[in-house]
Image 1: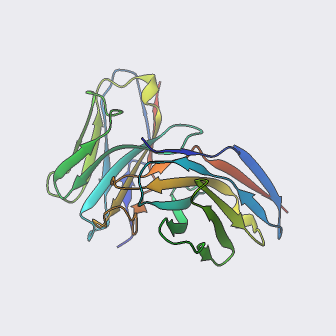
Image 2: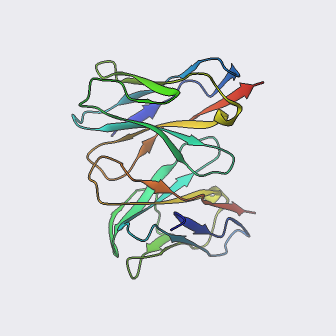
Image 3: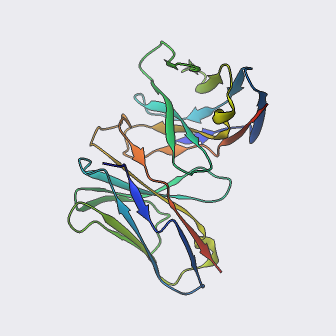
Length: 113
Length: 116
């Protein structure tokens, strides 16, 4: 079975600074996708960024980028120029041959003004 | 289309009562998923439908849980004889059948269940 681990229950960052959230995963599947989702207090899961495992190039979306290390099964999220609106729970997620996501336990990010 | 809609937003029930939640997916999506999220954890998969067919059920879905999607549109999740351990947020999501890519997966805002 696939597992996703996030070792940082909570993180904080000063507004305008950069923060990196960690994620590791375990799988025996060769084709899969990795995601970072944001869950604000409004509760809806919002897709932040997506990475196809077969692509070596790290995905970027504006201020959000990932460091994907396939051999190490590591998938960290970097948030640059942090904004107050970035404060939320962040979940790392995996989807492979199955039809459903496997989520990590989440990291609560606080942004300090 | 305003996205995936879930009702009610909150539900408080006494232990032993039955509850039913509703999910209205994005109309073009033929796949619909249910997840459960307990406090401090990520969502865990419960079950999914393609059109009206329930194609997979997690071992988390005990006999007290039943999900339906009678006409391939909205879905209901019923919990019978609720227990305090059922207290959680129940998330619904919908998507096109893009195998393995997770693309276009849209979540609702969830129903928070509290069993007292």
